[in-house]
Image (cartoon, rainbow, N blue to C red; front, side, top):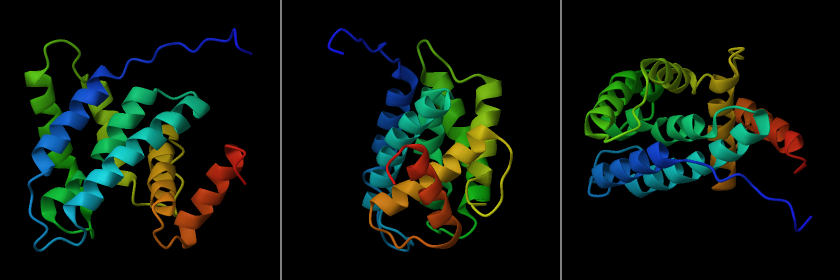
Length: 172
């Protein structure tokens, strides 16, 4: 067991995106928001970590999953409201990733990757529906699990997702 090695993972794009998000969000005021900005930052980072773990388990691109998870609530950050935030996020995700691409010195987010990220984010609040898209379902599961791990009351479709994922990971 001591001889086993793990391949080094490359998360340069994700790490740059997280840094950009923190820079953009850290000084935003809480006034008029459904959730404080510190919650959004905490949720952004922890969701990103959970997404990487679950993506590796499900054989999905962990960096792309982490990026989608980091950006999944950008609609709530920008509009200050939780209601309708997933659909509202589309334009903000596209603007943010376009800016990332223009500032990136090397690895950009491709158009295909951007489409996958946007689709997953727009659909991530539809917890009671199965999209038959593993990438979309991963983001829904991550969002539900992260809420649960932060002690947020978890019921209904959120709870069902948490229980299913915890069984998959042999945690329940």
